[in-house]
Length: 460
Ligand code: GDP
Ligand code: ZN
Image 1: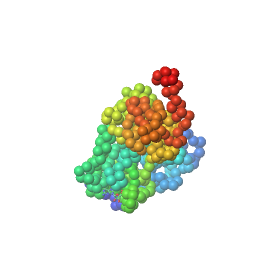
Image 2: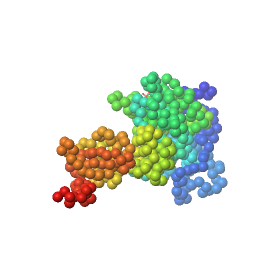
Image 3: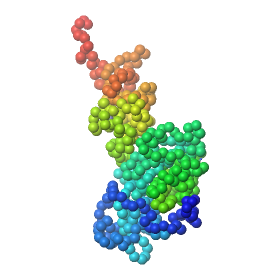
Image 4: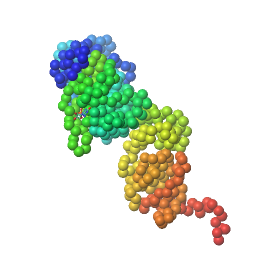
């Protein structure tokens, strides 16, 4: 599919050919920032040189844009054609990268990757420092979501948004498949929270074409990337926009999750100065390599309140007098936004459906064991978090740290701990588990004896 003012390509799978364009259109003008300057290399004719090692020489070197990276090779957009070129060992390139080529006749040879204006990384889940560059020099990242097929996962959206922000890429959200949505509520209300932060949110359907002109307008003049869980319709949207057409995978029966179908990234020209990078479906995009500060920066709505926290370096997880948690309690910040932040900062290292990390001593505590299925205090230090109103519900309340203050016997004869929230003062009673720290329990039980509320000797 082409634009009305431009004839469509003759070869559907490669719209980059047969277009009338100048080389400058291949990439956006470079901006000043490159987050990760490469180490200078040894002088070696077969290896890329770092920028500026040979002043004056660079001007005559042809430049090209990487459209795809394959094993040991890259596809390059050069003049009027797309060529396959070996990638020298040790050079990490990604779609969108600008490269300088060796001059002269013969097979094109990559000398170096030029400084990047933005980057999109994926850390390896096992070792975050080993991360993979997914795209370079992209200036707009469109997170594609659907409300039903597959269901909207806000945690995933936030992780995509964080990755975009960390790489210096402007975000947008595209809600696809609105043809399948409930006509009474075509857009999930939660997306409004992103709009309020200035992130454009568009609704469209790759199937019916609804909203596609608006999406095209959003992309105009940008080098954009479509991100999202597989099955949300990225390939279909790219095709509807006039990008490369590729087979789309049918949704797997049963779990309504997508299947990986798109295999390599591809950079395609959508119009003058407008480029679209189609990435393989990413089921998960980790944020393990990001610091708490970097994560917090992705939550502008949360940071608005952070100015009033008692501590400048408040993590908004356990500190007293935290204005962010107060805003959640008072309804000034949507609870799901705080929970998303909390899961990203805290949860992923120690918290899952089956365990939580003690906010005081850091112990990872299984939620069942010691004779209880809904454990909410740490067996080691006996501290708890003010999270649950009902057993097992770890999503409510103010999230303050709860100190164990007393031991008592409930009316049914069961021994319990009384916790008091440092944040809001609420008291709660929690069953003692068989593996709770006995010495601490004992010291709590005898505390009234060591500092009695009234003179004990009078009892005699
Ligand atoms: P990708 O994995 O994100 O690239 O998703 P695909 O483009 O492969 O789409 C996954 C499935 O969703 C395919 O069966 C598409 O035909 C279907 N699909 C994509 N967009 C839409 C849409 O707007 N409406 C409907 N009903 N189905 C769509
Ligand atoms: Zn705070």
